[in-house]
Amino acid sequence: MQYYKENTLIYLNAEFVNAGQAGVDMFGQSLHYGYGAFEGLRSYSTHNGTRIFKAEAHFDRLQHSCESIGLPYTWDNRELIEKTYELLELNNLRAAYIRPLVYSGSNMHLTTSSRANLMIAAWEWGPYLGQNLLTVNISHIQRPDSKSFPIDAKVSGQYVNSILATSDAIHQGFDEALLLDKDGYVAQASSENLFIEKDGRIYTPPTGEIFPGITRQTVIEICKHLNFDFVEKRLSVEEVYEADSAFLSGTAAGIIGIKQVDAQPFPLAWEDTIGASIQRKYKNLVLEQENYEVII
Image 1: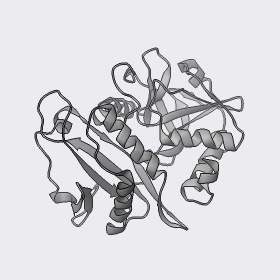
Image 2: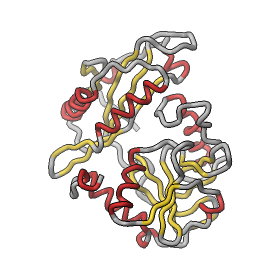
Image 3: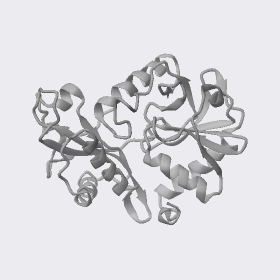
Image 4: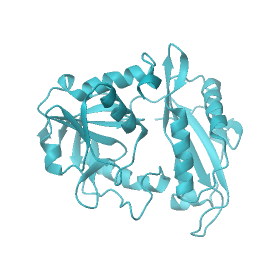
């Protein structure tokens, strides 16, 4: 996939510059050690115009991620949101994926950086995992331990773990991977949160060993608004296998149903599941066909 064209602009250190001419610091810690933080947002073409879903929450989390790893964050988030809308307009984008990235300056030492750069890019990108029901496997690759890494931060180097898990799943003929935590409980997919349905109730792993996704929190609020029974608890592999249905949530993927885990298919038809109802509600929210500020 080509992410930019000859005339595509990105926002880099307070200027709009040509994406192909931005350049890379070959001595930056982000390149060598994965010392950086990023975000993923989506804009949608709505009857109110181009709207970025939960922009403030995403940029606030970007700031939190940087602060969690000692990466300087000197930008005003309100201004960054304004510049992101301007970036979309300059590139003639409406429904788009948006990627802010904070990366370090030159530093070959294993010490926190005193200088950082900020880049924002955007491109047209459909649902990350497509729109068909997924087949997923239980990965042999473990989710990073919360005691060794700030796993509630969206840090660049951490995603090597995700790349390995997803690539291995695809190599085995699956669409995505589910990772276990250090204690053997199912934590999440490589870059999405997991929900299962059992006997008319929705379950999801609690925070602590998972990435607390913004879309995950939206799903929780939708469950409350629609009066769906909802429980946060650690999930064993057996509980996932024995679920009636399951789905993943994430900004890039949206809400997407799971057909089976390993060789175990789920018994409920997707259109009859609570997940399908949540998926429809979520689409209405991001397209502003409903006022999400009333719900969330």
